[in-house]
Length: 201
Ligand code: MAN
Ligand code: CA
Image 1 (cartoon, protein in one colour):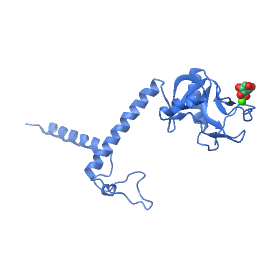
Image 2 (image 1 turned 90 degrees about the horizontal axis):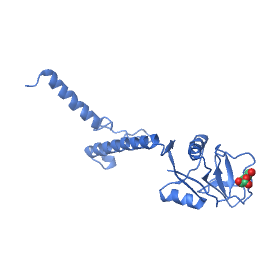
Image 3 (image 1 turned 120 degrees about the horizontal axis):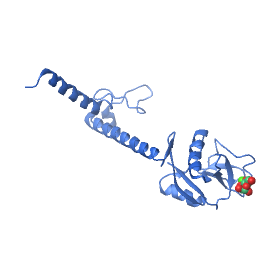
Image 4 (image 1 turned 60 degrees about the horizontal axis):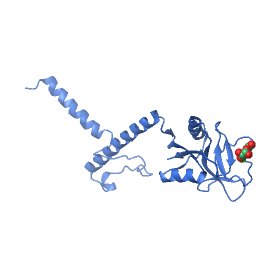
């Protein structure tokens, strides 16, 4: 026969296991407050408004929680191993290859990313970390537009952050790509040089 204390232990264990499954998916089975889904008037969404029965919502929510946990462990492994650097929402990595601008961009895009593009000081420093590790200049995801001296992101939008080296850019339309030096500053440069490939995802 189970003693009172072992009965309690079993009950607590069952509660903890249940909580592990449910507590990370708050609001179930009552009102749900799903971040980003609450209306302007603070209306809490019900699972049936998502077209889901509550039990399926719990199941999906727990799958998401497990996936997030697994992904963050993988990120930890890759960061520890020096394979990636995370900065804000971006993941930076290099294949260690030095190729011309078009080839560097192509290999980043093939992998589902684009060339590393610093949009603030923090991102510039993170990219610089990779440049320093390889001790090689790297092409950035920045190009000179039709108007000489006007540099843009790959989507054509104007730059909201720059880190030009003194007296740069000086190509006046003849240096349409941008490289990062090993001090983190930028130089406009011809696109046919071999430079380190750094991608962002
Ligand atoms: C070389 C090139 C130029 C750069 C100057 C700086 O000529 O790398 O892009 O502006 O050096 O002296
Ligand atoms: Ca230059």
